[in-house]
Image 1 (cartoon, rainbow, N blue to C red):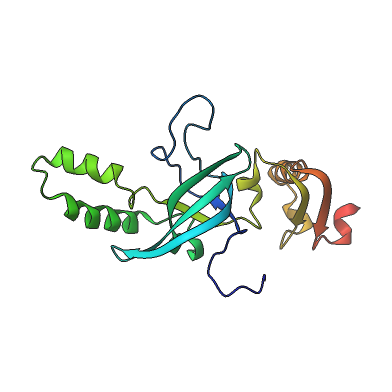
Image 2: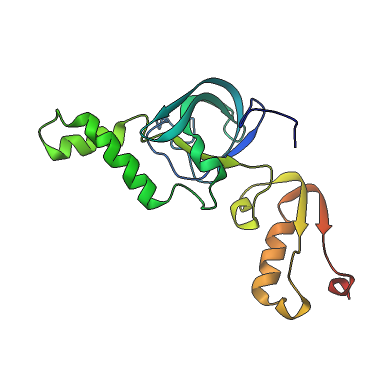
Length: 187
């Protein structure tokens, strides 16, 4: 879309797709943790790395909702997955691969603690956030919102649909665009 050759570039907008409690100190000023659904802008990419069968990048992310930057690792493999975040079997695969680095710790509990603090295990899981579902958009607001009615038909307009539509409409601060809505919707 942006005529770029790289998989991810400075200026790209991304969404965190898995909570992360280890990257940010809870000092009372910032968010205290990085939450599933937080939006960030890629500011700089330092390097790309492959480790444990996964692809990572060291980058600086700016979180506009909190006005802070974070230098961190992100897992690139999640960008193009059809799942919301890294599937549990892949997460387990990563955990056990990293666990092998801590076999020198003789107590199993210490090994597990080391993995849970490991920067590779704590790499942020991200997806592009140029378009998000109404569910993911809850709590956020944008100047312009595009609502695609998609495959809904008149028979599917239920109370749940109307709640969804209300949520989608109220995400905008300036303008809403209704896309693929049939004329019969407005009758």
